[in-house]
Image (tube, rainbow, N blue to C red; front, side, top):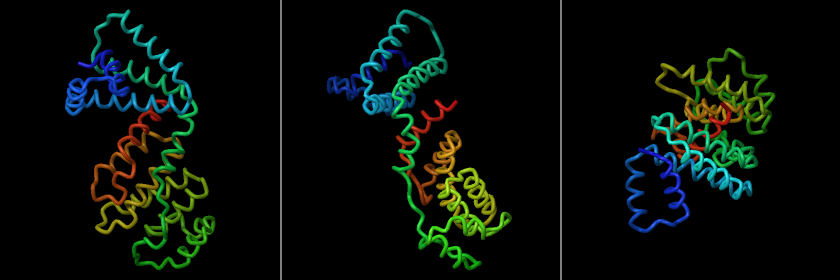
Length: 248
């Protein structure tokens, strides 16, 4: 069962204060205990916020107060209830690192953004030479003007989605990219489906729809054949979870 001792124990592990035997036992337990492993991830993120926000003393004070309050209140609770307390505590730690939180969404995109190159476009039945030209010239407005709202061509709609993204119109980008995925449903040749899912995830992140972005990137990371498999790492997904909690 996870209790307050785990936080202290994991803190000692992160500070490299455990003996070799204690460290090995903990590593073995982390392999078998998903909840404990996730808690370690949260503590790592809270420490990152401390370092970037320059708030180490404040965070340590909050941690001590939290542990103190839990020691003085002897209450038996279910693991699910305990997690609410841990999540609230860690969220408080992260909130104090305000600078880190404000930068986190843009940092996630910057670290994982892959620019789409026109040369990687898959073949299509309908020639798109004019749109390709506009794309290479970054004529985003022209692309949006040229693509009909009811287009059934994945290539056209995908380029319109990228154009909207580049113009900062993320809601329109979401609509276009979702349409690509919708058109592809039931088709054997799903043109631009992987690309649409990846840029849809970025658009959702830009729109602060963190839960939807998290669900989509988790789906991508379950498909080893996906073109953007694990572009977002487990650490990135953990940070998305934090953003989701704070947003809610």
